[in-house]
Image 1 (cartoon, rainbow, N blue to C red):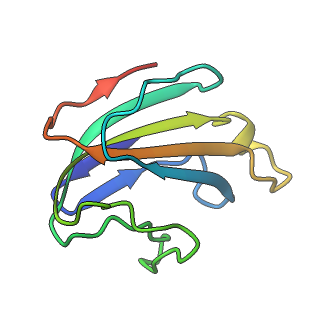
Image 2 (image 1 turned 135 degrees about the horizontal axis):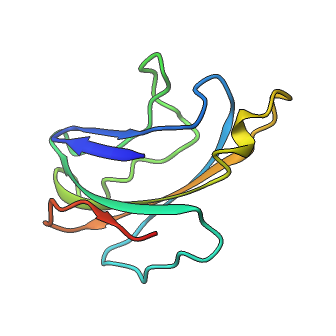
Length: 116
């Protein structure tokens, strides 16, 4: 669902042709883990090499509606990705049914942790 290498964070969706709902939050320290209401929650280490952490579309264009999450500039972060609605996203009616919550905070661990 989520993977990272220095300067690159990838979040996979159930269907790349459908719209998704994404909410983002950035914190100065590790927030509590909340899994209720989510189908999958995974946390990974990420290194911002440029001092930015922005979302891009499948053509590499920055999604302007979402903020830069590298609130402390270049360095190491933890990224917690919550997901729900993967099966519903495959419906043929075009509705955005898959939802993500992406939480970012400073952290040095490179470990991938499946929380749910």
